[in-house]
Amino acid sequence: MPDFVIPAPTTPSIPVSGGGAFPVRRVYCIGRNYAAHAIEMGHDPDREAPFFFQKNPNNLDSTGEFPYPPHSSDVHHEVELVVALKSGGSNIPLDQALNHVWGYAVSLDMTRRDLQGEAKKQGRPWEIGKAFERSGPVGPLHSVEKVGHQDHGRIELKVNGALKQEGDMNQMIWKVPEMISYLSEYFELQAGDVIMSGTPSGVGAVVRGDVMEASIEGLGNLVVKVV
Ligand code: MN
Image (cartoon, rainbow, N blue to C red; front, side):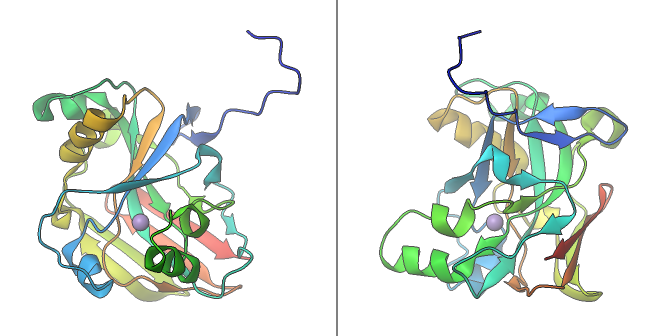
């Protein structure tokens, strides 16, 4: 251990269903991974190469509250499957990719859409719209041992009880093994890395007081209040 000159920050983590915690090293997020969402955002859903952005590991949050962030008046929900890796490497072959998955969770890729839109227009990075404090509400992780791999199943989000987003994980343009394999060509993946796998259509704005209920078949619900 180095002799730190300030107190070392704590390791961000995701609680594990049944006990324990999963330490998070990096958070990769894929853009436009469901055709219907690509279309609603004004893009061609044809299978162009995937693209990724990142959130900060400590943006993940499991408190059940999402503080409405500053400098935005258009904050959107995006319900997403989280894929958590127990190991990694470079140039991982497609047929070995799933061996690196520890488990899965329900998450929200909260987005300051107005700031993201401005960044897109100006050709700037997306962090200001995507990687802000507590922008990644996440439910408990479920191990592959217990729930198996998630290649299909309903994914949905309700706000105040009204259905806003719905899809099936089998509609992902880039499947979980493909995302892992592709990312590993550009980055060295390691244990603790997390992938947020994109959102189905129906994204929309929330306001303070709203209650978001995200759910993925087999992984339960994630209830988050906007405060
Ligand atoms: Mn997203």
